[in-house]
Length: 425
Ligand SMILES: *[C@@H]1O[C@H](CO)[C@@H](O)[C@H](O)[C@H]1NC(C)=O
Ligand SMILES: *[C@@H]1O[C@H](CO)[C@@H](O)[C@H](O)[C@H]1NC(C)=O
Ligand SMILES: *[C@@H]1O[C@H](CO)[C@@H](O)[C@H](O)[C@H]1NC(C)=O
Image 1 (spheres, helix red, strand yellow):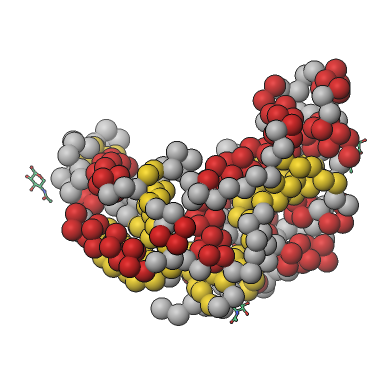
Image 2 (tube, helix red, strand yellow; image 1 turned 135 degrees about the vertical axis):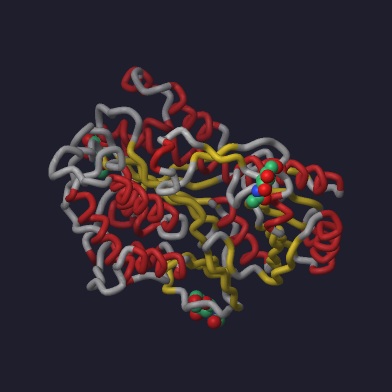
């Protein structure tokens, strides 16, 4: 999804058109050429047959990986023939030409997006594809993988309003009193307190659906990640917090990103760590967010794999993760022939910045894994420039902890999350 956000940011900045094609389902299913067996859906097993029945598929069913893999192989070979190159950094992305003549093509299962400045070039690619595949022309990109895309003279907005409303309806949350914050600050959840839920599946499904919402909702990324820690054995207090989160979604169903056309192409990131945040494992939490100019294109809230011995070490590990993402973004941009020579990374811990800038400190970080020191290489070769930021201006705070209302509100605004008004169609 980050790759899609980068495409939208570029389209906003460069004024690219965005067109959408849809693969005919029956056509997609025709790509099944092997025998595939499926376990019977729940509730369809005849009582006297036990659990051992399977069914053989005569046709592919929607979402079957095999058929879409075969379709993707066929599709790639055709677009490569007409001069597209496949990005090694994201296999679903193809690019042809450069500058104003460039056409970018993105394919997700049965949805294809074409982007570019020159409408004639886009039309030529579209006609060519339609000669080879059964594709429906959906015109301008409006609705893609559950995201609503709207455009005006100042930029492109992305919202998951319909998806959010459906989630609220399915969970009976529409009648709930809306909540102003995703989670009550200072509320610490533990893996072992409270009664186990009789049916953990309900919790798992909810988390799965909320995770999808976080693609466009950095405001709940930390909370959903936190709650996803408990999917193995969810307990009543966890489910209560999920319901509180749904009440917050009810307050803000249309919140989403806005990609402004008035933006430069600088990469900059904010990174932070909450040291020893997890009460059960003492592991720290990494949080970062990355902007392309004014436009937020990537973020993460994630518990670290390894326990850190100091807050500085936790920050250093978080920096390593953010640097990896910045390097990936630079590579992705290079597949659009956009060169980003440097990226700024802001961190609020001077000691961690020192550690990354300085090779002398080695003794102190002997036990830190070698791959973390990748930061130093990227600082040395001039790509990463590290800067100190006052904790008050630390945007990444929102990815490492639950904040109190004023700070939360101000960060949501700074990330240019807008209440996107419902798009036409
Ligand atoms: C599936 O295929 C089998 C054998 O090839 C055939 O007997 C059966 O009628 C088919 N079922 C459907 C629903 O097409
Ligand atoms: C930064 O790291 C130092 C050294 O580990 C630590 O003492 C300090 O509390 C940290 N500061 C912040 C703001 O995290
Ligand atoms: C474009 O849409 C955004 C998001 O809905 C809105 O905030 C902005 O005011 C709009 N700009 C114009 C010029 O209509």
